[in-house]
Each structure stands twice: as structure tokens, then as C-alpha cells.
Length: 185
Image (cartoon, rainbow, N blue to C red; front, side, top):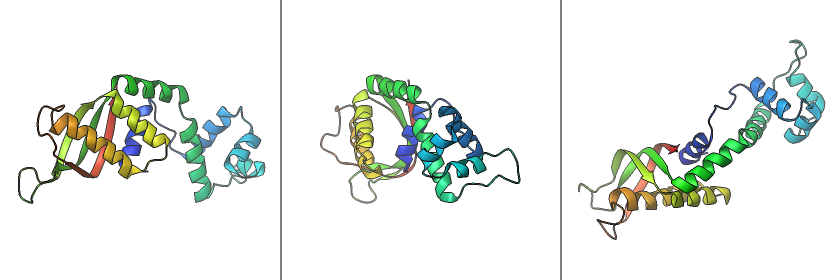
């Protein structure tokens, strides 16, 4: 998962995801009314394996392996705050968001000019159309590179060209994203 995808995920949550595997398993059990059978089916393991993972007796407890830990994390991410995520997504698509980043920005220009790409800190309001485009691309399985192109086009228009008032026709370079955060509402 790239920086942009992680930033979108953080923006859609209001509470942190459980950090330990044990707390994640408790969350999955709670969402399935305590049924180890349903959790086991969802994770692709046996019911007895899930029972060993959550056993209260220390001598019976067995920790999940790395593949199972990954499956548990993905299952929790998919089920964490679904209504909050939907509400925050709708809010971003309607009213836009603020994009905070540290990345390499500039125009395609000769080396050494003031427009030569360089690392910049940037916080820019972007409209809801950009949010809709980003979420649609993410839902369609777009990778980090495609999301970067969407943000580069939006930042070029909003920040570098001042909403179309300056620098018409210049190509914005946007790469080497160190972090990406989104503020919604």
C-alpha cells in the first residue's frame, strides 16, 4: 500500500484500528457474534485454529503465523467503521478536502531553473471532483502511480496555475511522495 492509499485510509477513519493481533481477533469475533466458526471460514482456517488463537489458557494458546496475521489485518481493515467511512467519503466528494504532502514538485523545466522539481511541503484545498476521481480510481484497483497522476493534475491546476489564472500549458512534475495526508471536513 502506497503513501496516497494509506493517507486516504487514515482520512476515512475516526478511531485507530486495533494494533495487536489479539485485539484484532477480539474485534472480528465481536462482529461475528462470538462465532469462531464464522471467523475461521472468513480467514480460511479451521475453527479449532481460531479457538487456539483466542484461548484464555496460556498453555493452549498458539499465535497465528505471518500469513494469518496478514489475513486478520485485511479482514479488520475491511470491516472497521463502515458507516463512518461511507459518511466521510461522501463528505469529501461533496465538499472536497485538504491534501497535505511532502513530495518532489515543479514544472518540467531545464535543470537549475527555479521551476526545476524540488522537495516541497504543500497543503492545498482540492475540490470534491478530485475526491470522486481518487475514490473511483481506488475502487477500480488503480495503483499508486495512477493516483499520483490524478493528484498531480489537480495540484497543478489549483496550486501552480492558481485555478487556471496563470502558467497555462505547463506540465507539473509530482513524484517521490514522502507522505500524503487528507483532511476531510
